[in-house]
Image (cartoon, rainbow, N blue to C red; front, side, top):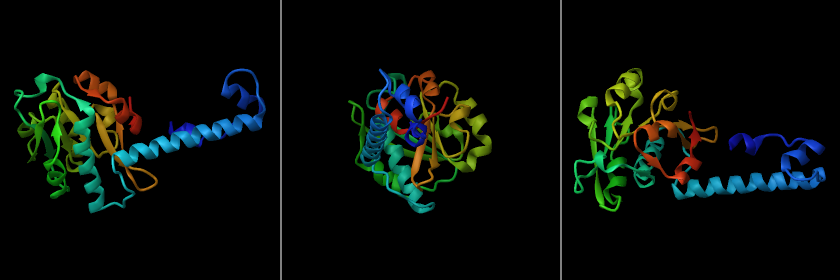
Length: 214
């Protein structure tokens, strides 16, 4: 999608072919292509507003945004029943390694419930992966980057949405990875193939907001 938004419009007949159907004048087709880019940009902006993602600089604000995203993910991913100990079990977000969220993550989670069971969100923090195997979302801090392959291997096929902030995480067995875009906003990429293998269903609206990874 991003490449399509910024790619150069091919001239004359190439433009007509790109538009589909019978050849049309290059000017008319360029107008259509520009309109498509505008629509895509507006849709992206709408999704960012829905997720309340402001422009930020690196630092404390970055983790306030990431905390908000982690809680929002609970509303746009479906976990199978076996991911929970029972219908009354809470929804658990785990933070593995250094915790840069401070009180933001707890504050964001306090007023949110998950699923038709109205599960309350519990935040657990640890430096030991074994302590967090009952989580539904596991954030693996960049302090654990070197151990990420072993951490993911240790989770096996657990029904956990793994999230990190390290280059290559989503391409190497993780599901969601945060990154800072050129416009200084927090964005994320998703490997939906891995999510499916772990029995998770990600809402198409969330997938459209993400950069896909395979």
